[in-house]
Image (tube, rainbow, N blue to C red):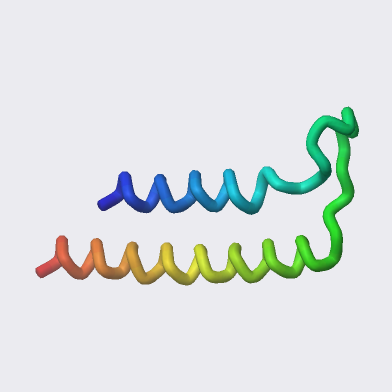
Length: 64
């Protein structure tokens, strides 16, 4: 269960977070586009909400 959550985060990191900037340009500090920032905020909100639901489910299960 928890391993699956970790894998989800790793997948997001590989396919979204670490995609900023063209590869091989040598640029050490790429600038995120407005679209990238908007999408990253949306992903972050979703992950926080999902984490809250998952934590609630774990606590409810333990407190039964």
